[in-house]
Structure formats: C-alpha cells, structure tokens
Image (cartoon, rainbow, N blue to C red; front, top):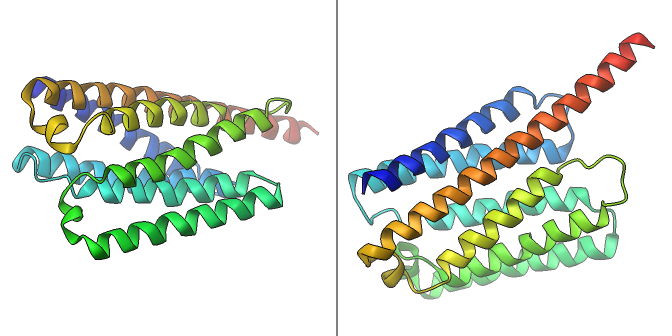
Amino acid sequence: MWFPFIVSLIGLFFLLANAIRFSATCKNRDVMYRMITIYLGLLFCVELLCNIIGFLYPNSNFFLSHYYFIFQFITLNLFFYNSFSNKIFKQIMIIVFVSVLLFLGCQYYKRPSLYWEFNLIEIAITSIPLLFYAFYFIISNLKNVKHDYFYFCNGLIIYLTSSAGIFLSGNSDSVVFTEPFFLDFWFFNSLFYILYQFLIYKEWKALNFRRTIKRSFESRA
C-alpha cells in the first residue's frame, strides 16, 4: 500500500517542480506558455488535495477526478486553440469544447450521484479530443525548424493514452476496490505521470535554452 503512495508523491513533486519552473519564467511569454503554467498550477492543487484526502480518507477522493479532467480539458483546449492557425479547425474545436461541457453539465444535472464516482464518459470525451489535437499539432509542425512544445505534446499523448486506457478498462468498482488491481491501477498511472512530467521538464529546458541563445545573439548584434 505504501509503495504506490510514495510513487504518487514522487509524481506530485515533479509536478510541483515543473509548475514552479514555468511560473518563474512565465513573464513576457506567449499564450501557450502561460496556459501550460496555469495547467500545471491547477493540476498541482487537485493532485495535492487528492493525495491528502486519499491518505486520510481512503477511497473518498473520487470526486476530485472531475476537476482534474475538466481543468485539463479547458486549459489544454486553450493551449491548442492558440497553437493552430486553420480557422475551420479552430471553429470545430469551439464546437467540440462547448458540446463536451454542455453534455457534462446536463449529465451531472440529471445524475448528481455521478459527482462521487468515476465518470467514464467524462474521461473519454475530455481525453480523446486532446489526443487528437496533440497528434494534429505534431503532424502539422513537423516541417517547422523550431519544434516548440513537441516534448509536451508527446508526453501528453503517452500519458492520456495510458491513463485513459487504465481508467476505461473497467468500471470504478473493479478498478479501485479489487485489491490486486488497486495497486496496478495507481502504480502504473503514477509511473506514466512521472514520465509525462519528465517530458514537460524537457520542454521547459528546451524552450528556455532557445530563448537564452536568442537573447545572447540579440545582445551581440
């Protein structure tokens, strides 16, 4: 029981470190950089509460998953919206964004009890569009000399694919309350999350390295 929790705390530490790194270097950066900063800050707050509540009151923190997936969906939609130039594609993004939020609002209005459970539909409809946007971002920017946010998008693809697959592999009862699978569920999810945070760190390092090089050339000119 302790080992998966420790691994989860390691992931939380990496998340905090990345949030601090992006926050400290956020001044005068583009909208995409600022959205990642907000994304990391919001996710750290949710993850911190999830770990505290999960430690003090086991199996009582499921409701926080809704904030996690919805915050992630909103902030990363804004990130990708500002990264694309195709007007038709951006209009499609707006339609998908509004449709998902309206559907979830109606779902929770009709079934308030879902707030205290894992909502598998919520996980699917908030993760799949982000996966598609990340793939589209990478493909549409392959010919560019500057590959900004490639580490981030690759990490997002790996993490969303693995975490959504783990969540959607069964209903919440079989996933969380069956003891042998309980360990696998959180342990592997935490491992993929650590990998994701490592790639976000690589992105931060690459972005700031290029910015430092650019400033050094400008100072010499």
